[in-house]
Image: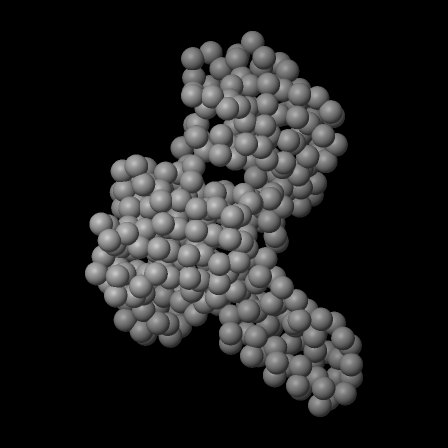
Length: 322
């Protein structure tokens, strides 16, 4: 399209395959928008487009992202207020006709997969390195490792005993982010092997989770009840978490941080699963070779690098080659 639609706090530039959202910098612009600066959203990352009446003589054009397409939205897990939604463009009501035109143009560019979850992130995550100050420590991320450095004035005894922490993303399976605007906000990392662990639960059968935090785990985690290790019940006792407080870990710092870590975790997971895909597609018919490949696939499945469905499908493909 090549056109520009300027709204309140943001401007949308329409290209042939994407929308470039540029956020304004000003005292009235939400700090999250200022932190993000701009975001390019491919049409393939969208599921729908809506136009609704807004407050005080405005209309709201919103591009709805596909589930799993944007690491920022995945990390937020529905906790963002409307005013901080980067996919909303607020316009004066007199521009409703123009907004409706662009909404129709965007809808016409959505593909048949728009209603399906994305199998990978299609919107770029905020770039590392980045850091922010939480209540009990400072969190840093260099693109490969997450580090927590505790403050003596805020960190619990459990964290002081554990010492400062460093977590390679290759050893993580997910990220939990509970908004600092809510009660007891935190950013919590989920180490591999603890994907299904309930905080505070003893090792044993894992019941269903129901916390209000945004939990975004690696898709390689096997679903359903299983034997799992325990995790500290409270984030302030967990060396894999930093807790927020009034003025600590604000949304515009902690959420982009969580999104960047999540994207890196997913990217490393995809690289780890790649050998299994090659394994299933080799097409050899030697029974001994097929048996060896099924054994290796089973090891990947037990390690949580291949889901139940992926394991069953690839095992069936291998058996069909006999």
